[in-house]
Length: 244
Image (cartoon, rainbow, N blue to C red; front, side, top):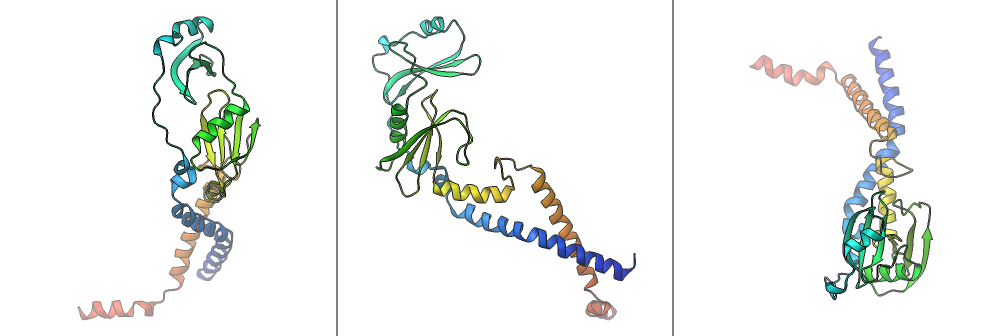
């Protein structure tokens, strides 16, 4: 390939790759600014989590022995842990199949799945701002906001950031916190990693292709730089060498 043809080929390649990459590079840059500007605690909603003092289990002697729970569940329990739920003693049971259930630590009564009223109480106890609950819904499918275990209670508050807290019906614990700030961050995170579906895969083929294209763009640019230099550009260097 002649020098002039190579020059035209590099120029055309550089131009078209630059056109394709331009918007994505802009998204990477703007996304980087947004993600570095917003504190990660604000994104995760941990700054609005209500802090509760540790609660001791009341009347330990009256708690149901774990051995009795194992016999009631036909010995299929992998793990049993005493804890409190809204200040009430419960036992968290992990079964061999991975299923998690809650039982009353005093009576052994099955508490899960928790109902809507309890889910609202758990979310309200977790959320520090004193604002009313706008709605509560049991989700059985993933949404843009939530992609964790299902089903899940979505409890949404009437605050300015439209905060939603997701509570597990099986375990009675908060699984996720979402807000308008989180959604903004998540949008730019999606653009940044170019995973427009799950928004979690940083090693997807699309971003690999663009990264490879960016490398070609840089190489073709370096090739064009070569054609922008002439012998006279180095006269000062050659003259210096002659003087030496």
